[in-house]
Length: 203
Image (cartoon, rainbow, N blue to C red):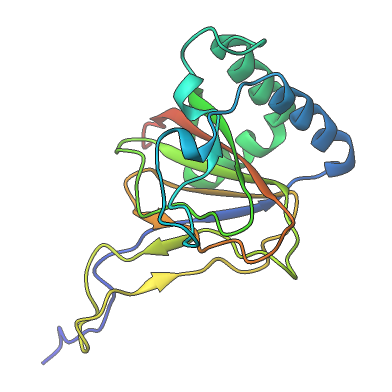
């Protein structure tokens, strides 16, 4: 038979970018973080005594109101300006045109905190930028495969490699992901945001 072939039916992209000039950009992003009000994990989830909290300290719940010293619109505008080169890398890699940052928030995972399985909807890219991260103590975000393993029936997951402070991960918003408990006393801090884009017309 001449039409025999073996191929992968589905693919899911993820882009890892190491932020250039990180020592210059990091303090600018942390300054923006300090202007945002965090909602502590204990405000909305009460874990059993001695058990990890299935949550994080986050600015997500205040992203669209007036709690913070920097408005949502200004925050997104300044993030886009600071990370202009990185957003251009996304445009070039995926052949899209960046429109705007849809929502941006910071989160901190203290000792024993982790983020449960979730996704950010569909039709956009989501981003994680590691602001304070020690690769000897911390683990990066884990991504769940949308379908079970063909042979075992188990749920497969993907752990991105070479993640360090200053790493940015760009991935489809619809992919479920989570973090494992921070087993150190050193905080793991990230900036997250969703970006809207337009597909470039094919020639």
